Image 1 (cartoon, rainbow, N blue to C red):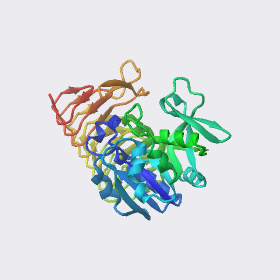
Image 2 (image 1 turned 30 degrees about the vertical axis):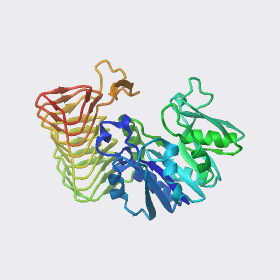
Image 3 (image 1 turned 90 degrees about the vertical axis):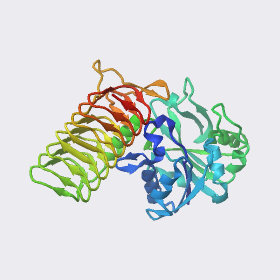
Image 4 (image 1 turned 180 degrees about the horizontal axis):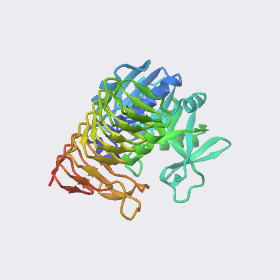
Length: 402
């Protein structure tokens, strides 16, 4: 069976992390979001995946190539990101008679994908505590009656998970789909027209679904995926290192004396860890990183090539690739009043729903000694933060802060 994955968007709500890479290529548990989805589709018996790409598409093409995990990979370009229906229309010329369609920024798992494959026309639904933030699905006799986007008073907690089984007939409705109030051609409008025309879509309740909308959602996804890792140590571990719980240490790593690691933790290849550092649970460290002397990292994602060499604290944060922190640089992750952390996203204040969130930092950021980064800071790529500087709020890419 064929799967179509929509992977063309930038993910503007994920800025500053998506200035340099598409949202689907952001890592959780040391793999891009899209890789988790591709691997789960492979396990579920999908033999061909069509990736609809656009924004920074070379990142996706170079990573996955023409075959990945035993699955044939094909690419279709969506020249302008004009919505989910428009993305599917971009792939019309390669569609099989029946196919799965998925959003590339949400992770769905093997068992649920197998359930969906059994349907002729189906829509995955998932139960959430906050349905008003999603498209709520109204169901009767197991069939989808309509999808209501972000209703003020939802009639149920079942939302549209963005995973569909279609037959090629859906394209007839995609071609007739009008522009929505958001200025996009949306697949939910295509589905609504098909239902009004007598098509039946079975509601398939799925058990696991990881949706990633904002940078702090990466931490929740990372935590969920790390719960199931199996311990594996391939690098060199010196004497006087303490490892507790499930920890993965990749090839070429050296873990030096005095390092204290509490799993679940995953560490990529060719890293230098220690001496005398503390890596706490639910931390992912990418390839070729350095976590050095008197450094503490907790519940964070550290991407490839980043160096935290000495006397640094990073908690509940997402740090991009090839960053370098000067000695004493620290990230705060808890307000003094212990209230909910609010961040600036696209010029507006957004509640994170978290009491602890440090920072989201783009690629190639450098800090001087004793720099301080306040809770909820969003720092763009290639920013230079001088010695002793205090950073708060949103910092545009290529800025200098003194």
